[in-house]
Length: 372
Ligand code: ADP
Image (spheres, protein in one colour):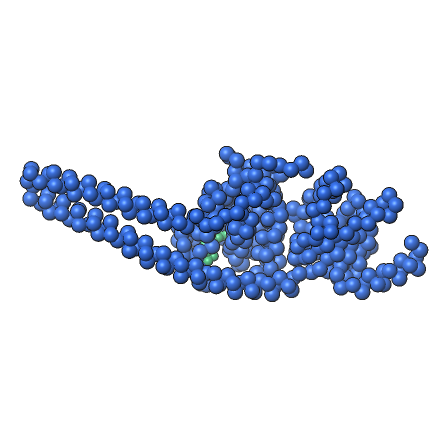
């Protein structure tokens, strides 16, 4: 292409509001539009020849070369011509949500990829406000549902408990005036107590089954993708910018068999809680990692550098309505537990090596691995 044409083309491309980045098949930047310069805070000259992964946060940053290689080898399109919402990284290290569309072009033997990028910060803020509103609504209906459930449980439990009280009272009265003839009756009363206690236990068990029966639709999900979707949402509009976010997913612990939306909800809750907990600390560090667990489970850890758990909540962290926040509902962690347990996993909290709290949870691993 002669220079005249190139300058002409460039001036057209510069008028496009979306950022455009062209890379070669090794991921090196060949062209970086002025909209991209504004969006990312770099000038083109600094980036020519650099790996495009510089513009991505972890885990894509470490994986992009692998993504490119995989495509060269398998020709399987995971993003080209499809596009996706993901997160990008500015020069100052801050991240922002983007919509990325990727195209491919061949110049003789040379293969190049064009990326068009739209900044979604504003759109996501609006969506988030809607989302918050919707959240508030579901909270209300959940509380109402729980209220109704609690009333009926209280009612059902009251019957065996009243019976137990009566039998114990009778047994105690009979023992006040010990009469060998009445021993058999005392025994009967105590047996009846045991039966009623078992009944109360069954009611509680039924309640637990009812709560965890929620519809789950399991599919094979890539943890890195789940993390980037959930964190893109969690970081918008909650002062997440000043948080140093680190993702370390063990490549042998990244394919899960889970309900994608529910697990996103768990990650979102835990990340939001961590960001909120770190509001007043100077050094804000958040680390999300995974490691192989036992018996076909993967362990996921969300660790923060916040102040740790308040002693008054530590004991009953996962119980509904446990909160230290003025506007908190105290339902986030109990929902997390219900979801994780419905997947057969466990969730718990420990002090984190970053100084704050680390929430650990386990999820079933997907057995089948596609050949990467
Ligand atoms: P809510 O966020 O509405 O209070 P949650 O069930 O999500 O409800 O959390 C319950 C409580 O657990 C919070 O109020 C807070 O005191 C504590 N907590 C949760 N996550 C953290 C964390 N990462 N660091 C410190 N405390 C936490």
